Amino acid sequence: MGTGRGVAVVAGCSGTVARAIVSRLQAEQFLVAGLDGEQPAGDLALRVDLTDRADTVNAVLRVTNELGPITVLVTAPSLHDAAPFGEMSRDRWLRLLSAHLGLTTSACAAVVPGMARAGTGTVITLSSWLALAGIPGESYQASATGSILAFTKSFALEVARRGVRVNCIAVGPLEPGPGAAVPIQPSDVAATVMFLIDDGGFFVGQVLTPAGGAVL
Image (cartoon, rainbow, N blue to C red; front, side, top):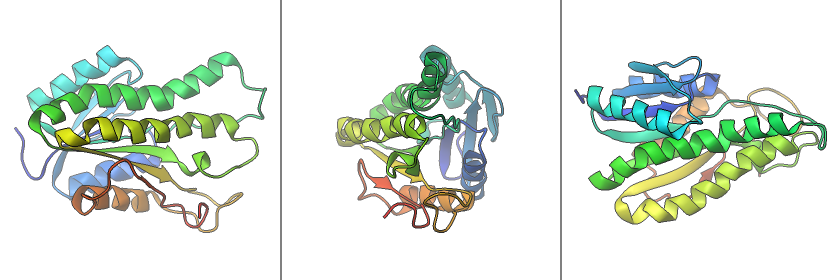
């Protein structure tokens, strides 16, 4: 069924940033499949447990069958959970880590093999500026999102020779607060996604930081 500029998957659609990315991709003539456990959005909206690799693989097979080959993947975890260090339970911590690193790796494992077989594809992982800037009380969130930065850099080199470009966006603060010089808008992140798709062919394993001065 593929039409327009191709098929994009946005894994995680609950947050305002992810929904801005879905809207921008649709405006840029992509067919968008939105995968999410609660609030999927897009031309094909699928409710999926993105921390479960088998469930994610099955959803991706449906996307390719109904829309066509996937050329763009954006992973967009949105869970935020803060606590002073030592005051987050083990269950909360594992849930946070799974919501970020688990979602990211499951989506990549489901989508990227098809891209590699085709010899082309763009993967954009979303992390957070908190992984790059020290903010008291955010050590758990910084660790969970920071794991995405580390994964992206190594994974990018694994698949670059097979025609798949993987990069990361460390999303800056959306509201005024500690370290936030100029809060950014979800549309700013969506614009960065489009830059990586259209003009960022020379980026591999890099971290872009639309952060309004919060990370220098």
